[in-house]
Length: 404
Image (cartoon, rainbow, N blue to C red; front, side, top):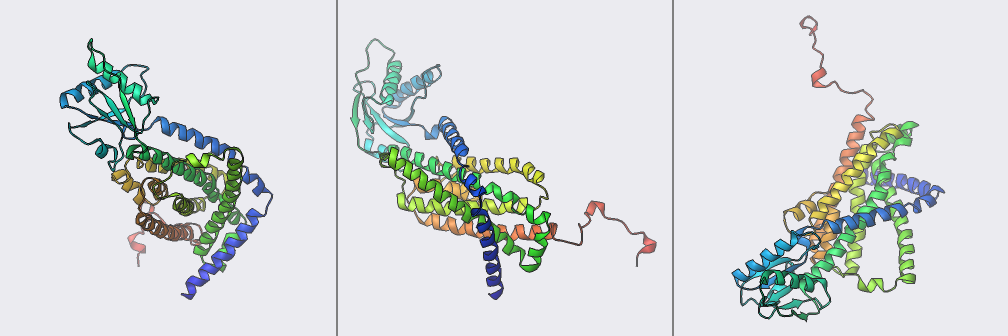
């Protein structure tokens, strides 16, 4: 117990030194101006993500009709979708005759946003739609092509409901993507600095003095948490400026934001916790990788692959939004480096709290394990004064006459 307390005390001293040296410097003021360009990058990624949304994330309309009638409607939709300039038509879902439209609209998967009844006799569209919504015109276009006869299709009657499961899920997916994008943007912006944290200490031999005075684990823990505290300081400044700007120029924006399934207070709390875990997980990996570099040029060479690795983590977590309980969602939540991103989206889509507690414990376990591994790697590869060990393929054979 005493040994662990000494490690934590040494880590706190190193963290306090690094935090003070970083925050109370003139360069930190320029650091606070850094998010201007990444914000534009985040907006660009958000637009691309909206454009490449998969079919499982598009609007679905359930059609209550006989099998033959539904086949005609589906064939007409496919023919129109193949034509240029028709746009993205809603997907259709077959429902047997006699199905209650309420059961379709309130389905737990939230895939249906509207229900079409009596498509050829007296079509009516039920859901969270109005007569001016584009989906009404698209359904009308599909029915006109499916009829393909002299008798025109009667006007579509629209029955607007206040809320449906499909509309709620679509709104929460917006919150899930926005939360993921913000978490990724902050982690991408702030964690990359950990690649060069040990360059100065290695160049002027201070690292050898530190390693002789305190355990290597304390050095890594102190530097990692110092940079986390520095990033949280910057985020506090940015959030204060952003909220003040919105309150002054767009006060009504907060009222129209889609409410996450878990509620705003808990969603914001989980966002802060998942940012901390994401920073510690990715930062521990970056700190270990950067510790192997000896010059700033080597750090610059490493920057590109590690940035692409972060983008890959976001894509893995993004695939899980459409099916958080499926194989992709479980894989993204179980993989430690993508787990914060996947669970951030899950908080917007699912109101269960226990999975988040389990995920935070799982991520904390991996933070401790990764710090242990990178410290051992650093001790073995950098601080080992006995020189590199011979590889098995370069092992020198001793002549038999000289063997003892």
